[in-house]
Figure (cartoon, rainbow, N blue to C red):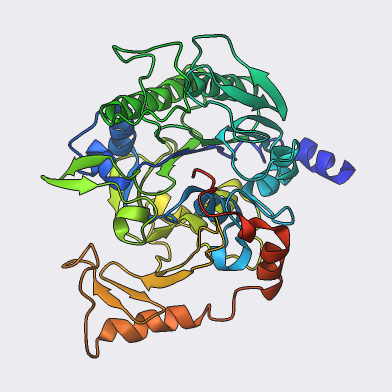
Length: 434
């Protein structure tokens, strides 16, 4: 510690160059929902503005479900290596919060947790401060919510709205830490069902229980608009604080749009594909804005995996990247440089919400997708993967080589831990709601 303080005293500019980092992730919000991407159903003016002045990525991919994505995003590893079961992040894992905290960043998280019920979970995984939903319990999340502030259960006054409270925390966090580098991870609770009115809706009702089975899809558009409003509110605060230029702000979705919400995308209907390994289930929006570095708007077509965010954040902060990751830094692309784009993305997907241990393994590039079971699809002509290609095809050998890299990557001990935990013994019909 003394050596660290001496270095800081001798080199006061060392940390001045480190950017603030904010990573926002919407819940159940697919690529087709952003107007800048070609969406036609919703209003996303703040996201569109960030894209116009920053970088909009056309080929970013998550996992098809929330917890698998969160684990992969936070650890930089494919699920094959460290995914235990739905609702859990194995406590021996190192997250991007650990790494940035060690580099002197103030770290905070606000929004949806769903990674372990322990009271100290966020702090254990590297976050100094937290305001979360679904940490120690599962109360309402929208109107009249129950949240956990630094692990302590809190109830809020009648008429309050969870997404606004969480946004208030984000604004307060960046305000209090504006004098030093900070990292804020903001996994939003919008736009997950139940689809309900927001405070900006004509039929906003302060008496509603937000976990009631209200699924009127007309409210989805209102929830999208409110989510976009909260992003604009945070962006404006950064400007008011005078720290916007050196703040790297990134926005992604955690998986495809929820089923039941059909959107218009580039002139056609696009049904929500959450949970599916077709592109509709894991093709998500990704927009990055960093005014000090990005001087004009750009569109990027490189393949980006949610595993790539951890090494990118480390590179941006000047933090050594741990060994054994599957992610590849895209920091050069953010700077307008070619970088080292991926040739393909690998996926190991198993929700593990019941005794069904079905695993889907696949690898894909811009044009083709190959499953471990042998089905090969042309993604340009058959996006819904209805008809596998037959016969020899050059893409098969390329993608099979990717699959072969991970054929022995699953730790036997992890599956044994899953069986011993009892997570695989839940009765049918008692699944967690993702």
